[in-house]
Image 1 (cartoon, rainbow, N blue to C red):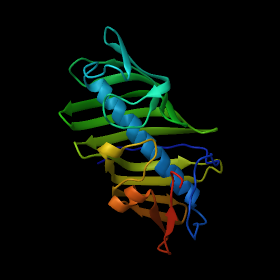
Image 2 (cartoon, rainbow, N blue to C red):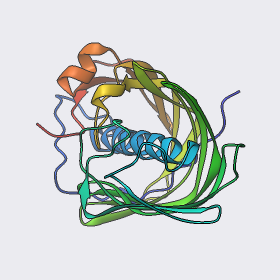
Image 3 (cartoon, helix red, strand yellow):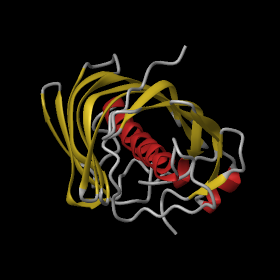
Image 4 (cartoon, rainbow, N blue to C red):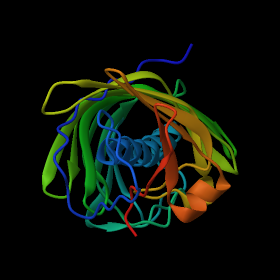
Length: 253
């Protein structure tokens, strides 16, 4: 059984997000669908990069991030201006800092991430978890605790536990249940089954290329099925309560 991801967020609109679609569900708006996709994409990228640097520090990192060590404590600094990670996980410029204590040989880590992410989508959190890598294979559990997600001028908070799997082709995120809370305190329940994206095209915001997601809010339900086309187009149809689907483009454009 997949672990539980609890997301707690204020849902005020942030700049840089454009949604399209002829229909908005009265209980699950396109904006809510977009927020769920945005936080899933930045969480996938941040969680995967954190897992990669914690798996075998500091081998392979020569320019980005810069690495310092004090015993089992490691600091990975991507800088305020950012850099493209040597891990090859993304071609996006990442910013911020990872500071973790890594238990040698076990893959377990404990520490923090500070304003870590891409552009105006940044995460800060106390983190813990475990990771293992073998060549291109990666498996990781990442507990973000109660994190802050900064999206443009708007701050969100969410509590998150991630299960991730990756190989040379893709990285997948699993969420058993999530509870996303807005300013009106009406819960949005989230479930994702293998929401995946091509490893070569992970970014600060993307629409997955495989898997599915279900959102529930009071009597409302939105189902999202991801395909290669959804990833390429950056848009996915959200089927609301079995009515005509509405197209949502969480990354704009």
